[in-house]
Image 1: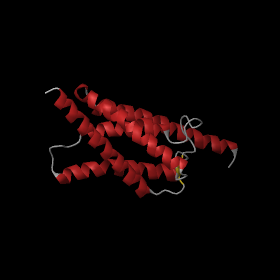
Image 2: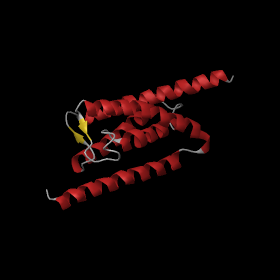
Image 3: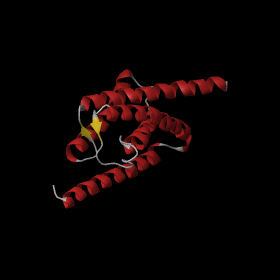
Image 4: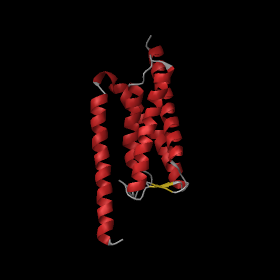
Length: 168
């Protein structure tokens, strides 16, 4: 590949990255209101911990590579996904979780988030330099995303239950 083609690939990948930041910010504005802002902030901040840990483990373990990214010199995993996109998705997931609905609705809701994220990740893996599976597959992403979202939701429930108990 010549130098011009390489720069064009990097440019397109950076446009995708910055577009993801913009779309995610818009989704937060649409789905998080003043009433749910505290819950969203807690969910967002909490999710940064497991995503940082899992992201660092898969990159250090040689399972996934992120050839192009923001802060790639300082952080080898995906800063965009682990510190902004996935925490934002978690905030929306937790705040809008259908607590009062049937088990079936809860299951569909829970599985829809990792399904969409995994489909986007597979498309990016096949057509960009933003992510490359080394010793990884889409179903490991699906499982880890589902597991991490559930951990975040369980923490969310636990935390706000404790807060309510404190102020009874």
